[in-house]
Structure formats: structure tokens, C-alpha cells
Image (cartoon, rainbow, N blue to C red; front, side, top):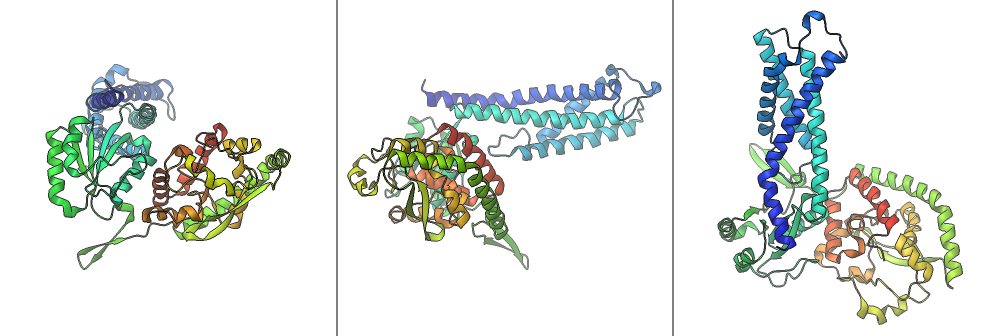
Length: 482
């Protein structure tokens, strides 16, 4: 059994068994919450003492405990807690748990009131609801961490075939590339247009007529159809083909590959109107991003100044030439600017590039060599640790760059961009970015662009903070840097 077949087998086990395992764990946690609530109310007597007349053994709550557990399970199902959904945030899950728990709490209070039973403590029920929310919420965090680790190892990952290599297909690819936590592995894509070659490391497996052959020969768990709706008949035929092979097929809506956040819905006398919002960082977002850039870049320069002085001294002692390397790069909307770096190569290195093109290890317009002979001894260390990038704090203060964003390309590289590659020029280039923390030089050029476009379309200050935090271990361990 190959690793791919093992992954598919484990995925099927997860689909069939994880739901019931989760239900079983929830039953244990709900009853644990109920027991802890009794302990908090009757033993610890938190917030209010229990009068002797209202003392009750735990066995007196047996029927209520069973009813509470059953009601919780029912309303957790109703709230969609047990509906398998990839990409749902923990906060969304927590909201569903809170919704189900509070609903059950209201029902239990109503039952106690209507039965006029004085033995049951209302405060204990409140404790049970609160503890249920906490325990189930923490359990979901643990479950996510376990799933994330398993998916990193390729276990329980859904193998996906993408039908259509147009803009919608690229949107799906960049989302799956940027979000490995979703648990998808792309087998490849198919498209009737032979001009749409490979996309990064993803292979074009041929035309639509090859779908059945691929389903027969490849372990595919799911097919995502990203064709325009004008191909409705083909889409229906593809869905039927997938169903006949026991493979789930889903269709990405043909609405300019827009997410709901990019739609502006209005009403014209009862006629619904859908507008398209421009994908860009808002003015207030840019203001906050710029303020953060200035503060952190200034702080970074202050803290890194001793290290920068040592680097400058080492460069000067190691090889003849200037300390800093200046180069023209392409910034936001194609504006040219001068980027600053510590020199990591010998003088005249740019003139030697022509002789080394045959040894290029990068894809697309990029040039990269893991063992570039033009590097100096100090330069190798600077590149591996990314210390050669520190002078770009000056670029950030000058407003040419941001702390987080796509890496700035050379004019000669930008000239070779395909139209969709140019989307990465819609924001300021950054010192770090999503592609740096997702594989860096180990990624292909197309994968880099897909991640950059995903960043632009999903920008938030929170995403910037996450990228900055993930940059630290990448720099410390030199992952993918050369």
C-alpha cells in the first residue's frame, strides 16, 4: 500500500469513525462538566452557601444529568457542531457550542420551573453550562492541534483533483497552498486548453475526457470543478462520473471566483443587485499597517544595530567592496525603488550572472542557486540567517516597503510575468511574507505568486502578526533560505 493510498484509507476511517469518537468524548466531557458543577456548588459552595434544607446528594441529580446530556447532544447536532466542515474557525465552532449550551440551559430551567422541583440548584445548572462550554471549547482546540499534526505528516489528507485551470482554479490552488491546515493535497488539474501548462508543481493531467481514467488509476478523494457555468452540461456529466466512482464532486460557484466578503449586495425596488468590491487594503487598514511598519521598523533598527555593525565589519574584512548592496526593484503598482541589503557576493557578481543561467534551480523568471559560487564566506552566513535583509528596515521607514508583503521583484523578472502574476504588485512589497513562512526558496515561482495573491485578498492586521511571528523561527533555523 502506497503512502497516498494509506492517506486515503485513513481519511475514510476519519470520516466514518471520527464523528462517533467525537460524540463519545463530548458525552464524557458533558458529564464531567456536570460533576464539576455539583462539586463547585455543593462542596466548594462558590458565590453562595448551600442551606442545610437544600443539600442534595449527587444521585438526586441522576435523571437531570441524563436529560442534560441527551439535550446537549441533540442541540449540538442541530447547531452543526458534528457536521464535517473544513476551514471553519475555532471561534465559529465555539459560537455553535455556546448556542447549543445556552438553549439547553433555557430548556432545563423551564423544566425545573414547571415541575416546581426545589431540590435542583439553579446556580449549579449555570455552572454546568459554563463548564460545558469551556471543556468542549478546549477539546476542539486539542482536536485541531492533533488534526494539524496528522495532516503535516500527510495522514487524513483529502486528495483533490481540480477541474479547470482558469482564474477560479488558481483561486482554489492558492487557498489550499496557503492553508495546509484545511487538509487537502492537490493531485493535479485537468483542462481542455493545452496552453495552460503546469502550475507550480501541479501537473496538467490532460483534458476533461481523462477524468474517468484518472479516477480509475489515482487515489482521488474529491473533485473540485472550477469551470465557468457556460460548461453546465460538462459539469453535470463530470458530477455523474464522479458519483459513479464513489468520489465526491463539488462545484465552485462561477461568480468571478468571488468570496462572500467581496460581494456588495444592494436592493433596487425589490430587485437584488450584486456589486463587486475591489480587492485592496482599505484606507484605514493602510493607515494602521503603515503606523505598525514605522514603529516596528524603528524598533528593529534600534535592537539590530549592534548586529548590523558586526555584519558590516565582517563584510569589510572578508572581501573587497562596499558594505551595502543596492539594486533596483519593482514596488507597488510597478513603481521602481532602490532596495538596500548587506552585500553577500563578490564585486561584479551581477556581470557573472549570464554565465550561471544554465545552473538556475528556480522556476519562472527567478534565478536561484543553492551553492552560488559568487557568494563570499560571510555572505553565505548572512543569506542563511537572512541577516542580509536587515538594511531593508530603511526601505520600510522610507515608505518603499512594508514589514509584510510580497517580495519585490527585479524589473527583468517582472517583464516575464504572466498577467495573473502581476496581481502581486497591487500592494507594497514586504520584508517577510506568506511565501517566506510557507517554504521560501523551496517553493516554485507560481506557488510564491499564489501565496502572495492569497495574502492580498485576505489581508488583516491579525494575518500580518501571524506572519511576523512565524518568520522568527524561519530566520533562526534558516528554513528554505539560500
